[in-house]
Image (cartoon, rainbow, N blue to C red; front, top):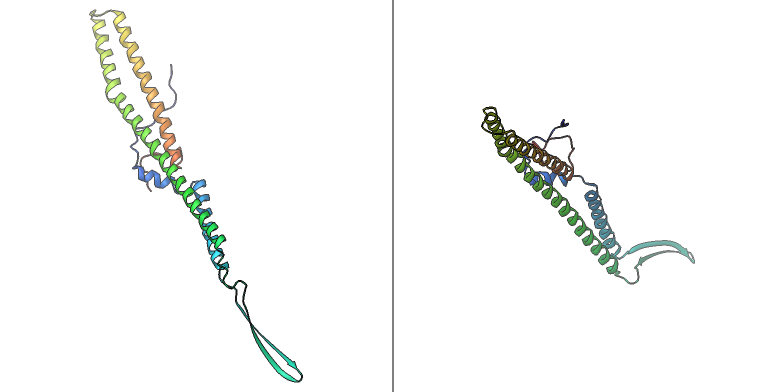
Length: 204
């Protein structure tokens, strides 16, 4: 068997808060929610403006029977104070609903980042365990057994058993590395970062 590609490097991830801040910068669904909240706020302002009475003052100049006549008038809407309460309440309720939706999107994004980061950290610990302990111990055992076989102290069956255990350990190491690579990709995707960049050195 010939291995192709590389396993992810031993990258210490940044603090969760850093990744969450990067994730919240420009996701399309959160940006759309922000625009909807802004539009709802503008609708509230319009409803408040329409609640004010539209009072108009006018003047008229004319002649009647040879006399100059100047008249002034005041136009008042009926009813005088239309507070537009129904529309104001509707726009306020719509804004609160959109704010709640925006908060829900932010919480979902943060949850996705933290969950992906937790899986990555668990995979990183497992890979370090394989590298530092499991593989090293198995290779040392195989080396000692090979020497014992060459000295005629053990049989070929004993050597085969240890070699099989060594291969199983390497297979577990590769599986752990694959899981780590997938969790690393999920971290970068959740934080809206390029898959080609390193986790080390990510800044807000």
